[in-house]
Image (cartoon, rainbow, N blue to C red; front, side, top):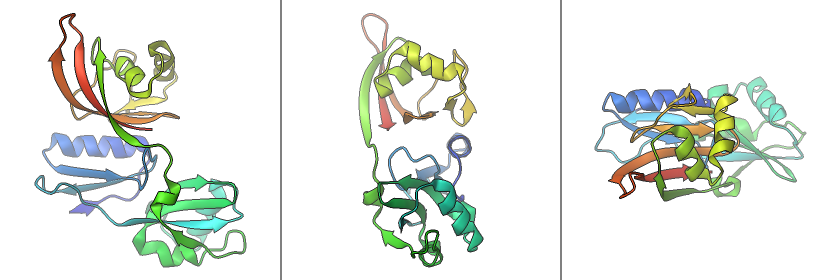
Length: 212
């Protein structure tokens, strides 16, 4: 088993896609649904899931992501051990690998030490399966169904470079296949789990796993 550091969405998606194509078991985890920064773990196919233990450290009175990351790296915490930073009304929490918790707790970005908290405290969004009927496997058609938005609106996001397919910027006519992942900035991600076949009208029945 081997795990990457936390990677940006496009990099994590590209690595996961490459490993799947090579027939390697893959687990991808960011500690919460629709996480942007995620760890990619390669493992034997017969293993259902693997990866480092993730946790979170919360800092009171911190109001921006940059302060958390700068304070942590200044204290010697590897940037690759830090996942998403989630802000709330009273402070900020950062997802991290468990091995750096002690170092993070000692960081004082606002003069107060951090506190380890359950990942559930950071939960925003959810992961769900969605069955849909689409005219094709084009990313714009799938994305509209996955996130419940209009196809024309999702197409604008593709044109603006805000949508990636397996880590690469999606083109306007890009198509996805079973196992492919799509990341849409501001919405989340979805993965094509199954294509069940055609309806009587020639549309396709699909099952998507959606985080957002």
